[in-house]
Structure formats: structure tokens, C-alpha cells
Image 1 (cartoon, each protein chain N blue to C red):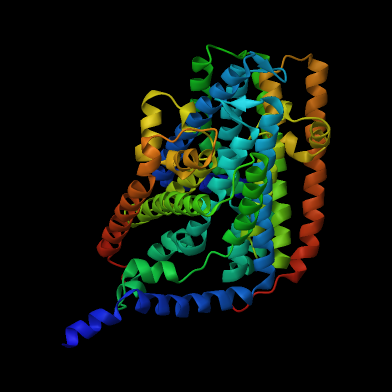
Image 2 (cartoon, rainbow over the protein chains, first blue to last red):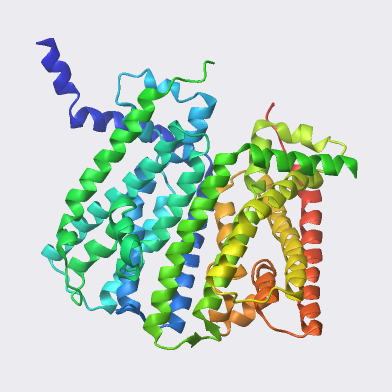
Length: 273
Length: 264
């Protein structure tokens, strides 16, 4: 009897309630450093702007890449930006994992009657994703109008599903690279390397040949971060089998990253202080 | 002089301790090379012509691979270091050292860069040379290239130093650091060769100090210019090195007065 009541308490509602309690503390503390908030916001805008300038410079010289013209590529670009936002918002604490492990602070997460992964991730809200979201949505609307894509209830639902699935890959890749911190000292380097991959998610996977196309599709799945899901949304492109595999593979990949992360967390033995 | 050498040595030794980070750097570099190889191959294939903005595909590849490899060598965490030193209060003990703050931080960086240069840049350089089929000359231009890199390192460090001064005021680092990084990367030419930039952006960028960090050494290596022109490019770089150094030094003298350490 008691057992079932505990189980019921641990439903989605329980976790949501806890989540908002923890996260609101983080947002409060972030708001008290206003200068940091402002510079972070503008930093993110500058980061996106420079990415956009690079993109624009390439298309000033080359009218198309592998049959993708400027507007279509812009769509891919905006899509990949938005798909990254959930990883920035909700899984940003991965960046602090190495520090937490080395200093021994991580041990505190092991002693709470909560899922370690959940508790750890809920502690930080990556406000820097906000700048990215604004920039991404603006660019997407611009590309959408430029391509004269229809606006209907169905396509918006499709877009949201596509974005959600793509974001799972971003999150999973970040979890996996952060999880390396549990086993090696320099996991932060792995994070920096994989973080650069997202810049290349905005190009069609068809540019890669042979074995690298397989690697960038299944092992380091940057192809799913924008290319495959976008095929369904663009009128001018034909979706392929992998397009429809995106949500399923996204969930599998995310689950895998969660398992690996948890395995690392379970192995953690603290620093002894 | 002895104390500076000791600091440089400490940087070299420290760099050797973190062997996994070297391996990871090399792996990361390799993946990056693969990606940009395929990307630019596709770009050039789609354009139909062999030469765009005066650059061929092999030239673009050599330029980008070496520029990004240089970026990895020159990347230092001075801005974060200053921020952390201020937060932890360690900056106080660094400020009272018998060497200046700049030298105290620079010397280990120089040491680490020397190791990085030997272990990551030179193998990349050799690899690129053979993969591109001996695309560039290995003659007197190497000397110009090396001198140019040494000046570029100083400009890069001075820019970091300048941004560190801003951090002393704002006490926030992520945003500022990312702005610095993206500007240096983009306008320096490490992301896209500056030759591709359309006018008037190209002209504007050529009057900025950032092009002296990556574009200038690359031009010394890949370009075929008369010695007078090479010397002129070097002098422009040197001028920027002096200007950025002076600006960061003046700024530091003001900024260091606002340092407030809460305990520590």
C-alpha cells in the first residue's frame, strides 16, 4: 500500500514540480548577475551572427552546394540552430561536469533520493540558449517566407516533431561527450570537439562520401540534426527512409546517452574529501 | 631572464603532463580536417569552376587546415584564467610576484605553445604538404612564415589580455570570451579564407588587427610575393603587434585598480 503511493508520487508530476523548484533557484541567482546575463546574451548573438556571416560569405562566392541553394541552406541552418536550443536550455550543466567531478562536488548528487541525471541537469538553466532561439526563429521565418513554404496546422506539427527529434541528437551527443569526464581527466576537450560538430550539421550529408557518410549518419549523427528531418519539410526535396527514422533513432540515441551517463555516475567514487 | 625561462619551461612540462589532451587535440583536428575537406570539395564541385576568388581547392584546403591548426596552437585560456584568479582571490598573489602579471601568464603559454607547435602543428604541416602533393614551396618562405607566426602569437595574446581587462570590470566571462573568439576566428581568416570575403567587407577586414593573426602567416607561406612586399606585410603585422600591446598594457594599468577580491 505504502509502496504504491510512493510510486504514484514519483510520476511525471512529481518530477516537474521538483524541476521547477530547483530551476527557479538557478534563474533567480542568474538574474542577480545582470551584467553576466547581458554579456552572455550578446555573446550568443555575436556567435550566431558570425556563423551567419561565414555562411553568407560562402554563398556570395558559390550559388549552390550539392543542389542546395541559398534559401534551402538557410532553412537547414536555422533548423540546426533551433534544434540546439533544448540542449542549451535544459542540459547545460554538462559543461560543469568535469569541474564537479574533479573537485568532488559531484558526490552530493549521489546522496539525494532522486534520479542523479535528472537532479544534475535540473540544477542549471542555460539562459544563453535564449539568444540562439531568437536568432534561429528569425532566420527560419525568413527562410520559410523566402521558400514560399505553406503554413498549415499539419506542417507546423511536422516541424515541431522534426525539431524535437533533431534536438534529441544534440542532447544525446552532449550527454555522451560529457559522460567521458567520468572516465578520463580531459573530458572537457571531448566536449569542445563535439561542440564544433553542430556547425557542420547545417550542411547536407550528401557532401560526405563513403565511410564518412556512414559515420556522420550513425556514429556521430550530425546528419539527423537538420538534414534528414528537413527533407520532409522542404517542398523541393524528397524525404528518404532515414527521415522517418529520425524520431525513433533520436529516442534510442538519447536513451543510450542517458545509460552511458548513468553508468559513469554510478562508477563515481568521489575524491575522498 | 632566468626566471622567464623557468616559467616557459614550466609551461612546456605542464603541456606534456596532459598527454590525453594532446591525443584528443589531434583527433579533433583530424575530424575537423575530414569535415572541411568534404565540405569544400562539394562547394568547389558545385561551382563548376576550378578557381573562385583567386583560390583553388587545394589552396583553400591548405589555408584552412593550417590556419585552424594554428588556432589550436594559439588558443589560450587567459581570459578564463584571469576570471578564475579574480574569483578565487589568487590574482592577489599573482600581482605581487617579482615578474609582471603579463609575463607571469605569458611565459607558461609560450612554453605550452612551443610544445603544441612541435607535437600538433608540425605533423599537420607535413601531412598537408604531402597530401596536397607539395602544394607550397619549402624555401625562404618558411622563414617569413615562422617570423610571421611569432608576431601573430603576440597579437593574439595581447587581444586576450585586452579582453581580460574588460572581464575585470564586468566580472562575467563567457559572453565576452565567445565574442572575442568568433571575431578573431572569422575576421582572422581561420573560418573562411579572407580572399572569399566580398567587398567592402574585405577592405574593412584588411584594416583590422585580426587578419594579422592567421591570414598574414598564411599569405607568407602560400603567396608568391617579392621580398619587399613580404617585408611590408611583416611591418604591418609588427605595427599591429605594437598597437595592440600598447592598448592592452594601458588598459591593464587602469583596469587592475578596480580588482576587488572578496576574501581569498
